[in-house]
Length: 194
Image (cartoon, rainbow, N blue to C red):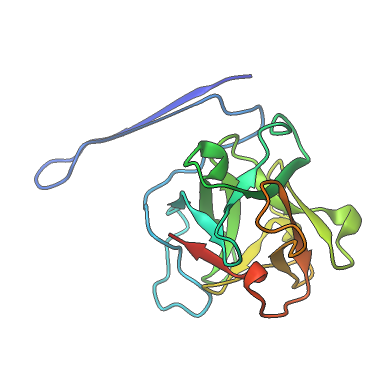
């Protein structure tokens, strides 16, 4: 099901007229209100506490080993279970991520959605107990496996404290698997906004 969402804000004085249009969201997917476009959202321990109404739109989240972008696979993007991978940066909506502060959590805790279909970055509960946990897109549900802790260089899931990791054996190939792994400090676990 396609929907159109139009937001318009007008104010007097020095304020600027702004118009936002989003189309083609899937049933059950909700487009968050994006109030801020920044290089990077505030990390854990930041003194800049964002309001829960503010979301952050990031168009280039690259891996520290190879420089490819975090990407939702267009071949499987139609439903839950969409593959998340590394791909050459192209600026498309499947590589644009919306970070919304997680309700009831400290600064640096986020729900992360792709702009393509507004599904959430999700750690697969079926494989969550070990290294190699599948990372996918899923309808947003607010569970711990969809809450991500940003420390400025790594993304850690609230569910099992493992970090977002690109498979070091296949970097820099397009389609490199993105998974959860124990933190090791290697570049394939470092994420950069550029």
